[in-house]
Image (tube, rainbow, N blue to C red; front, side, top):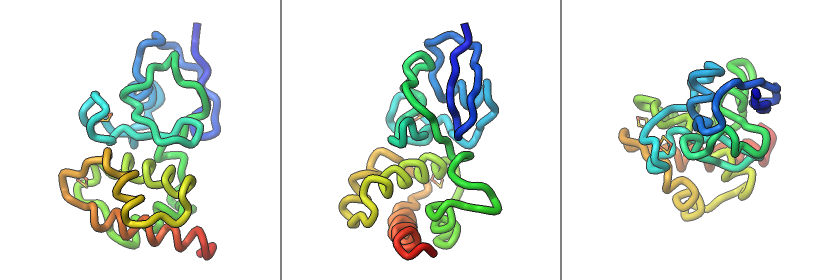
Length: 155
Ligand code: FES
Ligand code: FES
């Protein structure tokens, strides 16, 4: 029996076994390839999406265990109407190879929803599980501060 998932505000019927990780449902069944596969064992954060607004490693959640609406990088904003966090990422030229960045942005968006003006320490703690082989950590931190300001000032 198909499973109904709400992804980026749209309802989808997914006809896959319940033990398929959400990451592969998103990428292979729904074509939402912005969410990346890095390690498959909750060690890198590349696969981070939001479930019920909480940053979640989609490689670790089975289809049958998804218990709320899912937001992926494709649902945060559109090219014509980027979310503040995406604008801040662009302004700070955060990405290098880019592979980890959708996971970083989804994690950062959850952080800002919980803590609107995080300190450096709060950023480092929240982002610690999202690895970047290109070492973009200083720009990630700067972009999160910028996004917090944009949201605060409505810029
Ligand atoms: S692919 Fe899920 S945490 Fe690395
Ligand atoms: S930008 Fe290359 S891994 Fe993070």
